[in-house]
Length: 396
Ligand SMILES: Nc1ncnc2c1ncn2[C@@H]1O[C@H](COP(=O)(O)OP(=O)(O)O)[C@@H](O)[C@H]1O
Ligand SMILES: [Mg+2]
Image: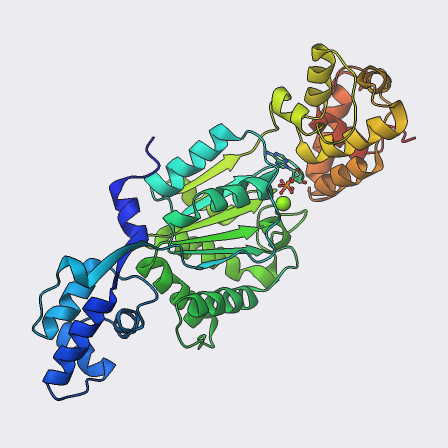
């Protein structure tokens, strides 16, 4: 897979007038004896006011054709001395409260998959799904950081505090307008805001990341459906998925939004990736800076598989093994074998996941848990989740 196709390079490269080119232009303008307004130049060249401003400010690159068109309008030819190529490393990114992901292991396959969908197939909506702590936020952030230069605009927003769609769009649009040095006039109606976002999605190559979409989906009842207050989000997903544009919305969620399910089959530009745990060798790396641990290779594998490779759980467990077992994995495994060990934070994580299911689903899950072998068998994380959520294992 090529990460840098020519078209992608082109998107991020542009030209700026050199002082030589700028002087040439100024002289041509002077010679004409007239001071041209941006509007007059727009009428002459057909370029947008924004592009004209950029050409004149000489801070942000434009594409060469636009510059050529501008110069020609003054009866000049664009020569090599008049412009310089620049890679657009401009600050067109708004990371909101994205986490620091400087420590990040593996996920090569998932990263390649996202790259394929988002950059090669130009998927419009990609959902990153998986239980709490599995690493959705980390992967989405890492992906955006790795490939930020492939996009004109990157905006990262968390839905954790449950903003209404209006609030979210207001903040996203303000940010984009600021990046593009446009007047920050956000349309007042919801529809206007949606249309404005779609306009940017069409005109620019944007990556919008919405983290924690489960917040706006209803817990229980119709899992995956947007809560009544947040129904607008369904519209947003639908528009982004259905309307033609060149951008991508990357959503992370514990559950798959129903609006995405509805569109996925027929609409090939929507994808979802169910995130599993880290591989044992990578899960093990999470323990590196968390003290000394003793264990055989087989014990390490058992430990990591027991927690389903869930990085959040493994971090908690690492601290627990240090505190309770002096770093001995064998001792922890012994407790796990007896089915009695619970770290409170993991319990909390699991209960939260469990509480999002509808009563019927909870009941089904409990039965499934009960009908499997008892937990003294080597249980997987999910299975423990169910048992713990149902309080069938005493905590210590
Ligand atoms: N591939 C990874 N390498 C290292 N740490 C990771 C990795 N994936 C997740 N983590 C860490 O595990 C924790 C949970 O990950 P997070 O992305 O917040 O999960 P989720 O968003 O699915 O709930 C975070 O502290 C995160 O930094
Ligand atoms: Mg998250």
